Image (cartoon, rainbow, N blue to C red; front, side, top):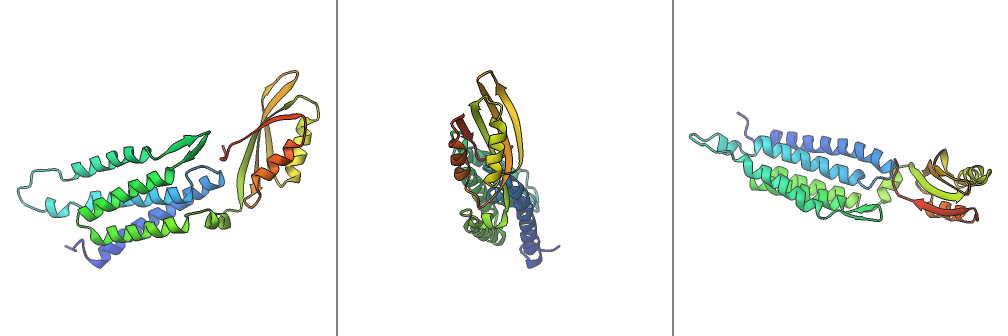
Length: 233
């Protein structure tokens, strides 16, 4: 029987964690394009933590389970740690005016619990490697510099309330196109004899400042209110 501390076993575990991180990055990339709060970094951290939890669950108790006359379930404490840390992580998530913050911090707390469990179970090498891997991921994606180099186009949407004139929709679409918004889709949410409220969805280059587009629309007196929420549908 191959020892769980052997190099091939440790490399196999590390490979699983790396593959999980890549899968998480792919999913996070799609969410980042949609301007969702949980982007590439958050998905990578969650994927790494989940893979490490699974490895600890499968192999972390082999030393106890191989003993004779052992009548206990050593995984019950580990299961409670996963649940308990989830509640702590949820407490770091804040919502202010439809903007969410703290998701990556919550994922980091969860991942830290997985590393602590691995070390506590005696899986020192994979625990240390996972901590180093997470540190590198957190540093690389600490700000949006690397993400902005990878992502070319992102979703852009607005909710606009304006005076109900026959030319208002064409005017707004023309202004949006002039400011680099592509694939524009307009959905009317509410309309009356005096006002019209509609939702605008489109795609912009990631280098374009959304504030410039909003300020360009504000110059039209028929537009009463513009609501912008970072994040696609």
